[in-house]
Image (cartoon, rainbow, N blue to C red):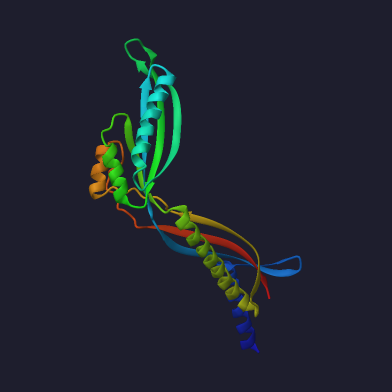
Length: 243
């Protein structure tokens, strides 16, 4: 009899430890439930490379400044239409540019500056290298924010599959906890989730670094290693009915 009591105490103790590790048993509206966490770690290929071409013009009037900028952007988009790229305008603003005159000890107006930024993306690094080569050294055109990333079209199904795997991981944990009471996880009652990715990398090695430094001297060229895949981390908090 003493051994039996000791064994039961051991089981209860183990269940308590599992409760701390995996989740907590509780009751809601007369139904026994269990709340556990689940995770999924996977990767997605970085299938896109992008660069931002920024046009900046300065003129005495807003009309002239914007005319120069839009004309230059039109020339850029016309050139790029023959290439396998996607384009999107990400910035368009015009403002009065001033600077501090130390001799006169006051701010003086230099003119109206207009900035238009166009994001150019492609399926290959080689295409973006060609874009950099075409516009390197062109007056008033600056290349910046070179990056590799996973497109939403590629990332979405991978994230959804990982979400399903995270829920199944939570169910396995729920069953492990419930088994201590001779039960198992039943219907999924509710779930919340969060997703973390490192969906950006700055490719600054080899030929690409050289062209970057020519086309955009202000860009970081510290030699970051190109990462081939995007890390995807999905975590869920799930509540199961206990059967």
